[in-house]
Amino acid sequence: MKLLMIYADKFGYNPTLKTIEDAEDVSGYREITKALVGFIHIEKEDENREGYIETKLVKNIKWAARKNNTNTIILHSFAHLSESKADSDFTKLVLDNVEGRLFGSGYEVSQTPFGYFLDLNLQAPGYPLARLFKSF
View 1 (cartoon, rainbow, N blue to C red):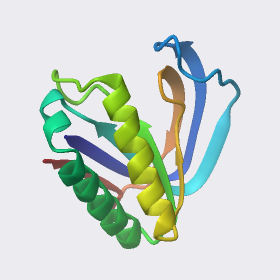
View 2 (tube, rainbow, N blue to C red):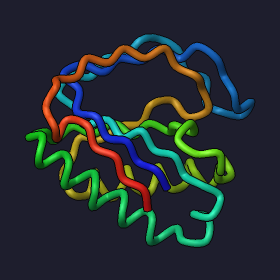
View 3 (cartoon, rainbow, N blue to C red):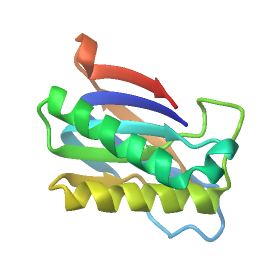
């Protein structure tokens, strides 16, 4: 599991290329302000430790959100942080479970469209806790 977290004053995305045929059809630009964006890469070896990686994701994201004084979280599947990739169905399941756990803890949480390449617009401040990386 690789997790890159960036606090964004503004984070926008527009779906451009559908990469998973049975992914939900989505279109249109969306922008969120003052949010912690989790760029999440789930690796093949994570398929044997679902509960562990979900708990680690939730704890790390909640900690980073508190440090950046935000209650808004965006989960973004980002399969570019490692050569090892988990099955897309497993990845989506983990993201959905993490979203539910964060929502249940009182966070405003959403996911970028799964199964798409996106045009991204990111405006992030330059201070140490605005950019964090974890590998577990």
